[in-house]
Image (cartoon, rainbow, N blue to C red; front, side):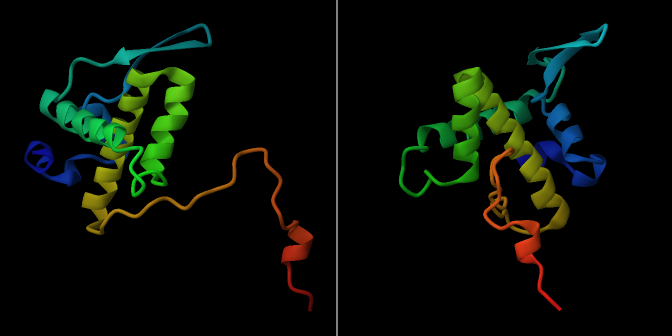
Length: 135
């Protein structure tokens, strides 16, 4: 269904444009340097939004299964759910799936998990001086 609704992936210059077309971005109101993010936009492709949200719900239902527990999308859902709540976390997961779909279709390669990175602000185990080879 996603393939039929998208048509050619070349219509979208970036993954953000695909997420916006799918209706998976929040409405933004900004004034005087203050920004408020609201609910997702209503003017979008409803079939694509439905498909990506259903895919995110599959992840939510299977997140406790041993094969799914370590996946990036499950960690993304859990991290967002703790901060923002269940509904927002499902939407954020759906948006990630839309952006990942863009890159899979654009590059013509299968999906690969992102490389895990240490949390921001944590100290690395190897200092820059220790990592360099001595000549």
